[in-house]
Amino acid sequence: MTLDPKTSILIILAAAFLSFLLSVNLWFGVLGDADREAGLFVGLWVPSILALGALLSPRGGGR
Image (tube, rainbow, N blue to C red; front, side, top):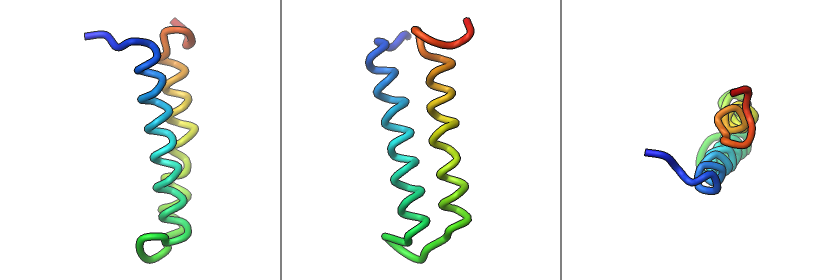
């Protein structure tokens, strides 16, 4: 099964945005106690997800 390029880009961007929101939530403790270390850890997911998306994207990547 293959995905439309626009759909795959939207999935990657949505995952990065959700991890950003989770990171901010953990850092500031919006929905509970603040856990800054966990916020930093989850915040590092954003560039990792975007890099993976660039690698696997039909328009980009090294393949």
